[in-house]
Image (cartoon, rainbow, N blue to C red; front, top):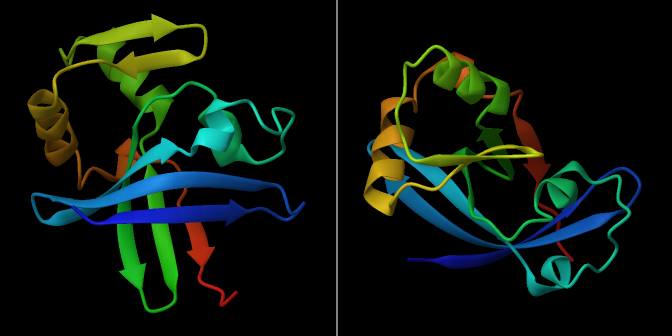
Length: 136
């Protein structure tokens, strides 16, 4: 139930703003990212910030989180891995295929079961994003 505001700044100082909820599913922590209103309004659409580009569509994004002192390790699901599972008919969860890839559209309980099932599968994630806390 806790709500956070996350600002992610890349090397080019291109910022992405998110409303984030930290949730526990099974034994693991996950972020539920949702783009801040500035992203939804199209502010700074030309971007070199990967997290900003990924959230041009107003959808929730789940990522596994590991908290280590003053840093966060965020592991996002690998869309190629998910697409491969669909092609191999290894998963059956409600989804839509868009020009940008697959969007899971299943009810919350089904999405949570999916996330819990693959939470420890090392193949399910892309390389982690490491965020360092800074005092403003």
